[in-house]
Length: 201
Image (cartoon, rainbow, N blue to C red):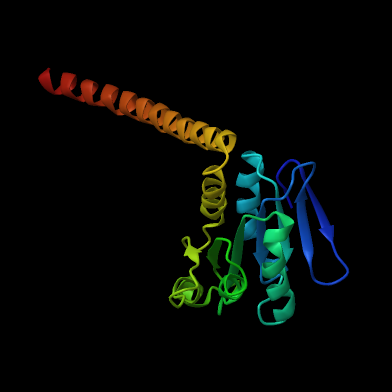
């Protein structure tokens, strides 16, 4: 499995898996309900690594390891975690369980089950429909990359260097779209001119 540069993969004694950024203090916690969610959630780790934001990745189940989920959320702030990204499919209670036990921002990523059942709509509803007072910021189904970007944007409010990296990324995106537009318009503009010329003959 391809992993973002600068990341190390660890398997703990229990079913806790860890991805940690070398030499960078972890500021974002990425948690998921099952190791099978890792391929989908690695997009969050990849974008954070590209933005040089330290993070850790854990497998913690809201249903099978509820105490571990509560402990992780309660201890996150004192360990320097500023944002938690939680991904789960199906019942998708992980983000809510995390949010219930911390006051730091929680971003929920609804995931599609391997069976494809309900197209991920069940996870979306479970993640987004939180009661008043316990918010979870929810991205689209499988939207781990956007979750990573949103976490970085939250941290960048008090980190001017990170904000500059985010703005550089946006500028790069705009330049790629402009390049694509130029190529496409040149191709079809030339074809359109040829077509008009042939009709005039």
